[in-house]
Image 1: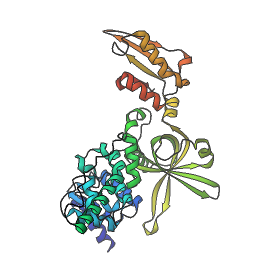
Image 2: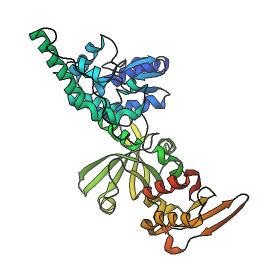
Image 3: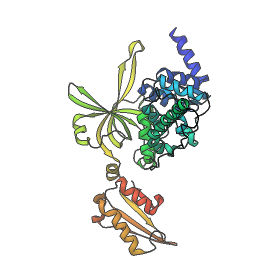
Image 4: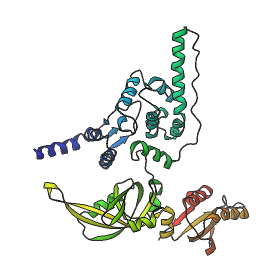
Length: 409
């Protein structure tokens, strides 16, 4: 019987992958960790998982085509079956046109502010802006006034019903609140708050190219390369801290990090003495680089015998600035006529940018280019800097990213 079930499961996964994985995701949609696992399995097998969508999504995960799944609205934290049922009932009268139309039409006794905000954070309203992420901040800021406007419309309608035509008055639809657009990191944090993980992107992507110059193995490759290997080895790994979990053991306290780099997720054990040293670095959503000990252990698994597991224990943990200080051999700034059109002004700008980060470990070289000629000048040791993200952002905005190069061995 078990063999038959295994055969049927393998057949469905191979021949109807999107329907198979949509069913699996729907079966565990109340468990965020399991949804995340099945999501990673789906992506690893070439499937695309679309964001939840108030106009085309359903309560459960549904296959869109052979290689695409639509995220279930019911799997968004803070919604619930009755709230989504109310959304789907209102949608029978046609697609929602905007946030105000949505709030006008849904049953607000069931769909409350928390539900609407969760759907906005998850990206379920992106369909109103052709899939554009950039309106999420404005939509979230406007939920309150949209619900108030909908309630006022209902009060006006009751007045018209009570007093007859002409007594209720018409109401002009308000505009969305104008607020700054979220940067990608904030958008992903908000998304994770509603879904439990990152869906539309990954915070590590912005650092992947740079960190990849000294961290040679991603988390998926680490798991694959570990199969069959014995003993303990030192490994450099990197990713985003998705969660921090404290556990009590006979030997005291230890912390378990869930680390993700967009290719896979791995748990990393941080023993008490290491955690005490790096507690300010180990925070949820932080990008970290870890010097770790990796070893494979075999463990009994029911009647199936033994299975191999990988254990990762952190020795040292760096934030991005700390990793640059540890592994970079300097930074080179290239200036051409555009940036140095007035030499004194360019020098003053450079000085003002570097000043707050002086007395760090990284030397600074400035390469001047003018036509076919160039000259490189190393700044003095008193102008060594800490390559903080804020400094890198300022230099990139001033010189453009292609003219700011962190040098690695």
